[in-house]
Length: 328
Image 1 (tube, rainbow, N blue to C red):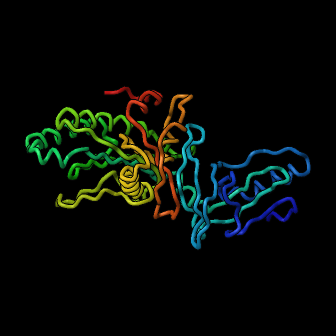
Image 2: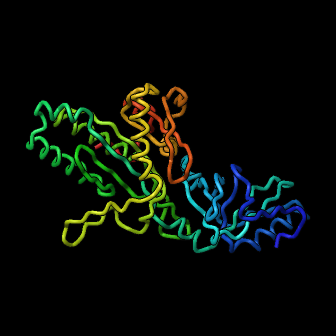
Image 3: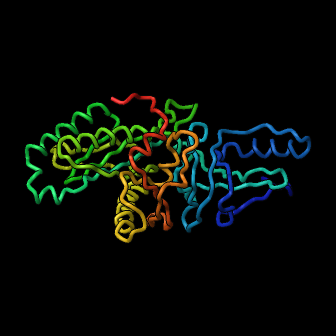
């Protein structure tokens, strides 16, 4: 296939990097070739297949690391994914006709990519806990009151898991991409976690008289067919069902922000958002993002530097479009 001299066929190790490309099912290969050959002879081209947009960031021995844009029709949404070598079929370009490189992938892998679950993660930490403990202000009664108040917030957001430990709270919600051929749809709404943290902040302020800071990420989670959490029948094992790049980024950003504050790289902030999470938010037009403080952190799982943005609550709320759900 793709023997016409206008085609450029790329091997796995030679696919174009950082180039706007198309991810498409292998079942459309013959139809795509026919459509392009018709275009070469007549100038008429009929679009083929169900496509999504990608860019290749890195090629490893075992996979092609991609930035995937699953919500291109809804918002600017980037997700880091891996196309395994054994799921790659071929890559075909046609620069003569300004055709984006077409990455043909195995059907079963691509279907799974659209139908599996992904996650949004947040971690909330209280500020000034050590000092409050030293002053004897964090009594058991206050901590139980805090726990009960978090329960009440959790009751309003049943699609979010709330895991409390020490002075921290881990938040997680799942979302899907879906296709028009399935019952699943695009359900990514990161603004919901913003709402949740807004309520949690008020709870900490009112009960403990402490403020909080939060870190937010999103992307692939290897527990892609599981509920938000797992609790054993004996109720003494709790699994967060969380493993993957965005979960690891929570702690990498926390470490990088603490170091940056200590070194004076940036000021303390109330929200730290991984860049893909931040860019995916539905923001009001005209927000000058260049005015925001940001810093890099090293992502061990992708062996690359990433950015996080430092944002204050009022700054975010003034520039965020209203959610489909009203504040409760």
